[in-house]
Image (cartoon, rainbow, N blue to C red; front, top):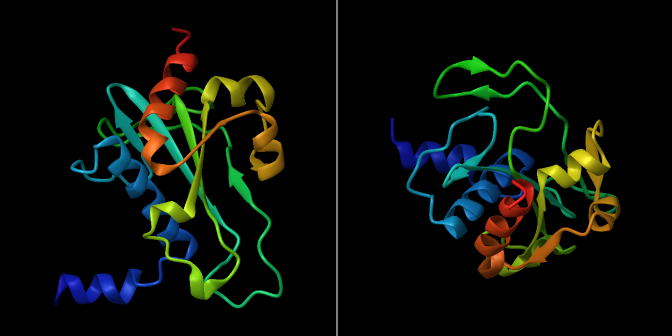
Length: 174
């Protein structure tokens, strides 16, 4: 068996929801300079930098399948009993485990023009988890309009690391 052949077979379509989600995590990891650490599937949050837990969510208007119309943008924000991959222990309380949420929107409405590897085609919305907990504590999903109403920091790839660090400070009250 060949690993590269497998990866091409399984993950070649970057518009597929699950693959796009992992790609968004990788893009954020690259922006933070933590792409050298391996990804833990199902961990309590997606990334960690300097003790800051980062949850990455992705959405796109265009999907891999044929669509009658573009998708309505929505992100999952459900509080949960987080599982720590390093200790194999679930949290006692149901909550949002990360300090910061990064909502990654792959822009574009024409499939032939979309390249998920082109970071300029993504818009990032960064929000301290405390803001979600304060304004939408029990909510399981959030649409783009409601997300924007929470006044996240909207940024490009180049601004992403600074926005995450800023949101972490707000979340921790410093």
